[in-house]
Length: 211
Image (cartoon, rainbow, N blue to C red):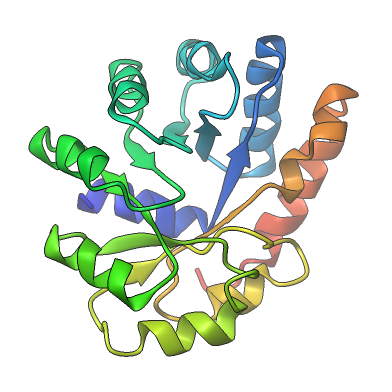
């Protein structure tokens, strides 16, 4: 992954995983996260309005870095890149998506849960992967054991991570950031509680002490 985006992800420490069901929520949600201290946002392709949400945030919320998440195919990767995202994240390692991104010099962070998948990522020259689903796959203990032979690989654990355990993950030197959705809970978004989202975000950011 290019140094610029790698550094931004590391500095953020937490990457909010965003699922937008109503595109009208995209901008106020992004603004709440930005005000709370997070400027690297992952908008997932889990809804039909994901692309429009990315476009609106890109246009109306300056100063944030956008990542496209849950990219499962080349079509969505191409759409996301056309909208100006700085990186592609996927829950698994799809060789076709990885090859497509690398052939175009696009940052890609695929998901892994096994040593075989880490080695496959390494064969593509990747140095950052998403450990997913982190908690269901054995959590930090598993990640430490799994990552031990791969000293050049760095990880972004996601899945089951929240305010109760993200600092433990960040304390591991092979983790550059944690992905999480606890500050972007669907019930808060639907209720328009963006001030609460901002407060939850700020509380999490203030707990990060390694930077």
